[in-house]
Length: 356
Ligand SMILES: Nc1ncnc2c1ncn2[C@@H]1O[C@H](COP(=O)(O)OP(=O)(O)O)[C@@H](O)[C@H]1O
Ligand SMILES: [Mg+2]
Image (tube, rainbow, N blue to C red; front, top):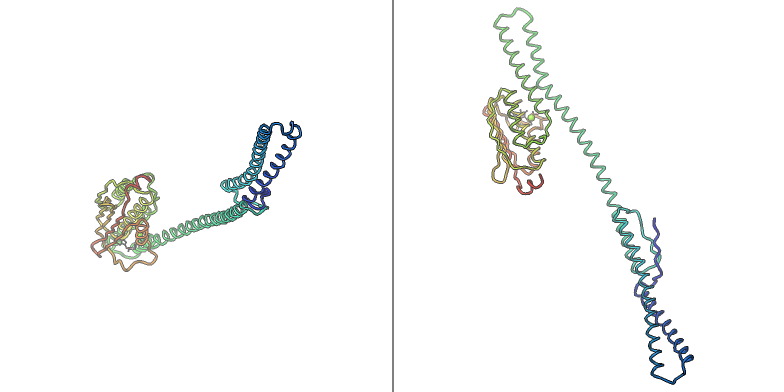
């Protein structure tokens, strides 16, 4: 801890200046008196009064000037030393040395400033501590959230595998072993084979949809429109579903908005592939006024919106993602007719283009 010694300005700056001025006046008067005595002693006393008084006045002025220079320099040095100390301390604070404190010995105007600066440093030190603690807590929480999300995702995959593929494999085993046992007519065997073929096709579809869902969600530098077109082409190739797409090139959006929108599109399409049994899928991405509009529809079996499955978060996550970026999410479903989702996200053109 650095020790700052104040110079002796006991009564503050005004006191110092009074003190120095008085000293100057006393010493200058004494000197002038001595000079007059000396001059009178060495001059031819009183012969020429005018010259004598001129000389004495000249000496008096010189003496006063010399002493005023000396005392002004002395007092200003005292004040300067203290302001320098304060300024050095402020510089140290600016460089992040919050732990340093000023120790002022005397009480004057500067000691009040020093005290205030010490209080300020203490306050900054506490704030920095709090900030560091918060940052640490945030990183721990982020880590925990990441772990929790990974566990949840794993549980969801396990559940999906169990609900769909595992059940279907079980059905396949039962059907095939029943077909192998006992006396079976040709028609029975054909029926069983038909069933086996249907179940394995469904199982393959579920597996592909699950893999699609597990694909990395980053856009990998692609625009939202390009990534959506790529995804739809992929689906058209791998699944027996007709895709009707109308994808416009939309203005550049902040990365978070693009990623959220892409995740919503991905989840909606996965739902269609897994649950709808649809033969047609419609996808639209366009700019509507000052908003981005996304529409994804199918002609599948539909479902009752109010009979949400426990442990299913796809639809609610889509809604949350949409609201997080300031959008409106709508889902409509008519049993036996199909389902559609709509997303409308307002955009702030100028800001987005600059931030990209
Ligand atoms: N396009 C769709 N067609 C038919 N049913 C759907 C569709 N989308 C969602 N569903 C139904 O809504 C349920 C909840 O969907 P979701 O929240 O995405 O969870 P998950 O896909 O994990 O089951 C699904 O299990 C399904 O029954
Ligand atoms: Mg889903």
